[in-house]
Image (tube, rainbow, N blue to C red; front, side):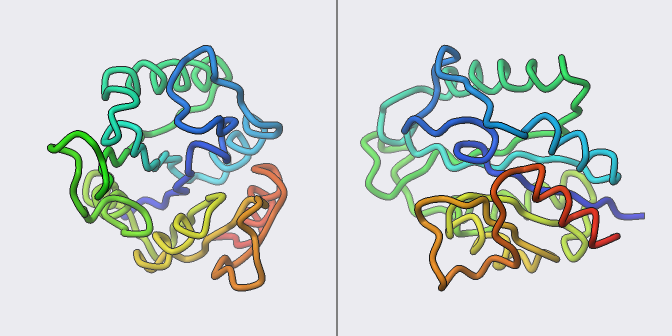
Length: 183
C-alpha cells in the first residue's frame, strides 16, 4: 500500500521568514504550527518539509548551517511529539554566486523534483498527497506533481490568480481542510 503525505514549505509556513533564515537564534515557529502538525499526523499522513534554500547558491550560508538549523527545527518538533518524516531542500539558484549551485534545476520550486524524490523514497501516492505553502511557487510545485490539493497560507503574495485549492490563515485551518477531505 502506498503512503500519503502532506508536503509543507518551511519559511513562512512553519517558521517566521526573516529572509534567508538559517541561524538557530532566528528560529521562531509561527502560531498554530504545533497544533496543526499534530492534527495532520493524526490523519495518518507523513509530514515532509520541502524548502527552497537559494541562500546556499548565493553564498549567504552553507549546507552545514542549513543542516544545523534543520536539526534544531526537527528537535523542536520531536520535543512536541511530532514525527516529521524527512525534509528536502533545493540549494540551487540560476543566479547564484557559487558555481556548483548556480544552475537551473528540477528541484527548485515551482519545479516538482523534491516531491518526486520524496515519492520515490517513501512510496507515496501523490494523488492522495497535499502541499501547504505560502507562495505561488509552492502551489505550482504541487500542481506540477499532480497532488490532490494545494493549500496556500495567507501571505502578501496572495492574489485572485492563485491556483491554490484553498487559502487559509494558518496550519490549524489547513489541518481542518485536510481532515474534511477524508482521504
